[in-house]
Length: 272
Image (cartoon, rainbow, N blue to C red):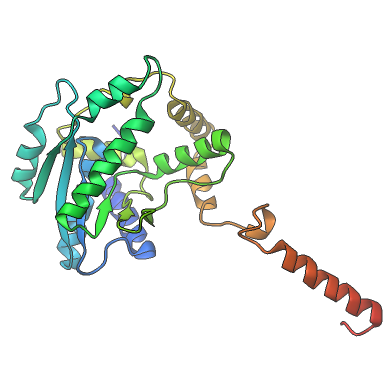
């Protein structure tokens, strides 16, 4: 548990969500936000933060949705009881993606890619059925950084989880209210609130996943150089396109053309 006062951690977490919402306009008047609740610390925290935002703005709806993937031993009663106690509208969808993943992924291979695709497809269908205008996912700052380095190291591209984006078919808008929030703050908040955490028996049980190795790398950097994660995250919103190599982001041909025109003018004495 952090040595910081609890109220300081809570205030920092709230501030990070409010700043992100202000910058990216995650939630807008008239929205119906489908909050994807897995039973983990991140999604519980996201729900709390959106409830607080709703109490202040009072111009959007919330509906919590859980996808019961039929993992063995999944405690089906926990989320309904929790949400009823908080008086949050909710719906539970039962889809046996667990059996599909176990049948299709060879022993020893990571399951996250297929599992996330199946889960995402079912959540999009749920959003359409419910008439949700936004789909809220609980990824935090550490998830954003880990995804950035996974893409950098293994896909050769500079890309990560955006705070807000539209799905490829244009039907849904996905938001990540915790994208400015540190995982450590979320973990402390979860302890403060004593959330009834439901562990994932799929991805959480797989050793040597590349994401876990990236997390370990980032945590080692953070231990050696405090605030290193925050500095790297700040770089994601401080991009100099002219100092990279993506010709779609910066028109290098136009730059070369203008430079040529200036050279020509200089040679004739017409350019100053």
